[in-house]
Structure formats: structure tokens, C-alpha cells
Amino acid sequence: MHDHHQHGSSERIGWAFVLNVSFTIIEFIGGWLTNSTAIMADAVHDLGDSLSIGSAWLLNKLSDKNANGVFTYGYRRFSLLGALINGVVLVVGSLWVLSEAIPRLANPEMPNAQGMLGLAVLGVAVNGYAAYKLSRGKTLNERVLNWHLLEDVLGWVAVLIVSVVLLFIELPILDPLLSIAFTLFILLNVVKNLASTIKLFLQAVPDNSTKTKIDQQLMQLPLVRRVHHLHFWSLDGEHHVLTAHLVLNQALDSADTIELKGDIKGLLSNYNLEHTTIEFEFPSEQCRDDKELRV
Image (cartoon, rainbow, N blue to C red; front, side):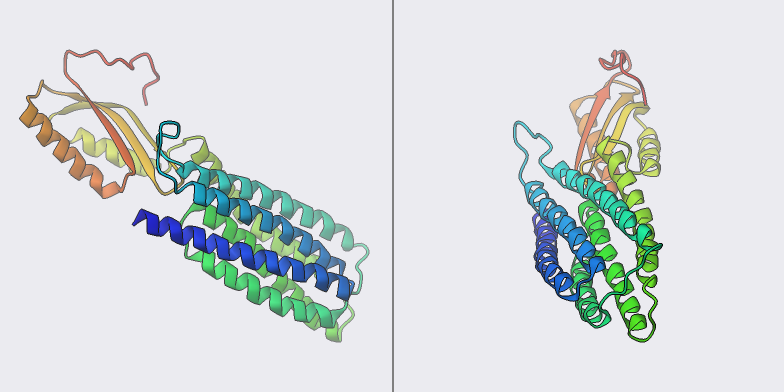
């Protein structure tokens, strides 16, 4: 199931990369033919998107490799690294778009409206299809990349609206106004995703309520006196890892130990954890990790 999921993720990102690169080339040609600085600027922005999507595709493929002696948890965190890189690139790209659009408010230029209209229709179609492909993905990598493409779609919607208006009214200031509005909207959402990615990258708890619930349910087991050193973190935003020490009420024979392990397995099966490590400590036993900060 995981291999199929990861293959689907890589395939979606690969399609988005091919579409984005192809359309970036068309944008450069179209921007030159229409003498539109706005389209040329968007082409440069799309070129950055293409590089980001390409790197994300490579990192996503790498994240599917099996665990080994060096990367004992596997390569899933490379996908998270891809999400982090692309989030940063998109924030920088959005700030660059704003730096280009804001000065045009004071000195707007009249572009070729007919050429803009044709490219806008093509831009909405191509980027919209790529965004649709990635919208079915669940990884943080795909979510961040989807915002890349949604930014392009909304940007081309802005160009489409402006081009239609400019066919009838000479009001070039609409172009930078709409570009600024859409870019700020996308930037806000990307910053939220980027903040979540950074937290996961720093091994923060992916969901504090889930951690609390697991802690409480482990404490409800009859043979468990106390739970400590419970660590809950995520490999890539989807696949989580849990480790914990359980202080038992009494020493157990092998049959009771196996039964307790079965109870814990059933309890944790509801959380779809990628990997779990549970250590038992008996009443008279000193925890070897007591020198560490308890959580």
C-alpha cells in the first residue's frame, strides 16, 4: 500500500514538473512576442517553480528507498526536506513578485491585451490541470507544491481578467493590483504550511491531542503504573513514530508480558503509527534515561 501511495505521489509530482517546464518555455516565448513584462516576470517565477518541483520529485523518489544502516528510519524525511525547500523558494518567489508589482502601481504600462488573453487561457488550463493532479496528494511535499501551482493559476486568472478589461478600457494599473492581491493570499497560506513543515522538521509533536490521548490510554492499562519518556514525532507529516517507557505495577512472567504487548499493540493500532518502541520498567528498576528531561 505504501509503495503504491509513494509511486502515485512521485507520478503526480513528475507530471506537474513536465507541465510546468513546458509552459515556462511557452511563457518566455509569449512574453517576448507580446512585449509583456508581466508575462516575462511570471515566466521567471514559473522557472523557479519548475526547479522547485523538479527537486521535490527527486527528493520524493529518494524518500521511497528502504531503510539501511545509515538511514535506519528510511528516507521519508527527504520528502519533508523537499517540502521545506519548496516552501522557502515559494516565499522568496512571492516576495520577488511583490517587489516587481508594487513599483508598477506608480508607473503602469499598457501590455498587448490580445496576446495576454491567449496566454492567460492556456496558463489557467495548464497550471489548473497540474494543480488538480497534485490536489489528490496527501503529503506535505505535494501540499506545498500545490500552492506553487495554485499561485500560478490565480496569477493567470488575474491576467485573464485584466486582459479582458484592457480590451475595452485602457486601465493598466489593474495588472499590478490583482497580482499583489493574489500573491498576498497565496503567501499567507504558504507561510502556514511552511511553519508546520519547520515544526515537523524540528521533530515537534505532529498532533498534541493525539499524544495526550495515547498517554492517557497507556495509563489506563491495568498493569501500567506510570508512563514517561513518551516521544511522538513524524517522519514526513504522515508517518509518525512513538517511543515510551512504561513503569509496571509488578514483575511479569513471559505469558503476562506477551499479553500486555498484545494489549498495547491493539491500543496503538488505532493511530496508524509507522514505528513504535515501548520499553517496560519494573517497580524496583532504575530507568537508565532518568538523567534526561522528562516529558
